[in-house]
Amino acid sequence: MSSDTHGVTIVESSGLKQPYHLVDPSPWPIIGAVGGGLIVLGIILAAHFGSYITLVIGALIVFTTMFFWWRDVIRESRTPGMHSPIVQLGLRYGMLFFICSEVMFFVGFFWAFFNFALFPELQGNGQTVWPPSTIHTFDPFHIPFLNTMILLLSGTTITWAHHGLLENDKKTLVTGLGLTILLGMTFTLCQAIEYSDAPFHFYGGGVYPSTFFLATGFHGFHVIVGTCFLIVCWFRARDGQFTPQRHFGFEAAAWYWHFVDVVWLFLFTCIYWWGASPVVAAH
Image 1 (tube, rainbow, N blue to C red):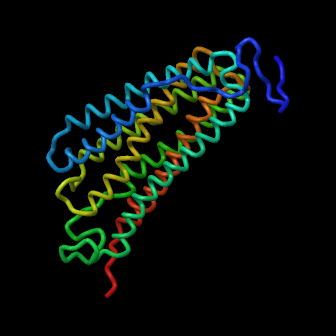
Image 2: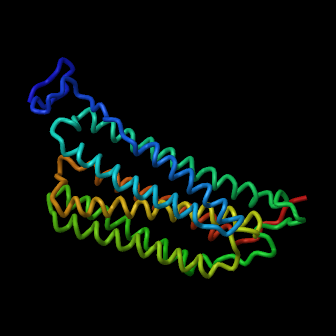
């Protein structure tokens, strides 16, 4: 090991002359962008024409991109010298900025919901009450409340797993991650059951179904992505790839999962609970 003039440790065996990671050319960003675009287009086609082919193709491309891109990043992280201390710091900042961008993503959905909830006359069609008089809302203390408890419990299990990692307790780490994954899958299953029993539909139902399914549906998508993230971490933890000193992959997954938890609390409080109480437009 040696240090440069700025005090940054560089691994001589890696052959690197500087502490930064110059990423090799990769096809996954553009392929992932195409897949994401197809998902958005697929949602529109599914909502208006009932066609799910584009949506399925986009989802397959995105999940394929996730698999191979994660594979490449894991290989880089295990290459001596690639993830120097300054690179690890950059990765943490990158993950924080990514989560901030995701927060603003959901701000848009909440903005749309409250815009119509507080000013229901903007819906048109003569509606002056929110939710619309034609909509029968979900009971917030049925499946939504159960899902809230599931996600809150998953937040404790992922924290338990993190504690096990810091204590170099592999069994606790693997068990905690496994329980979190099972809870995430259970949440997704409950959400699917809720959608299948929904008294209104995404397409042709007006403003309320659109804002409801977009906000809760994209959160559900984030739960699926977070679950996949945790599954990758579970296999890596089982293989002993995380140590108390080097485990940013796990940390990033935990941060993302806590973000998903917090967003759901806002969704439950604002859309399921508060949004179920009629609001009449003021004239």
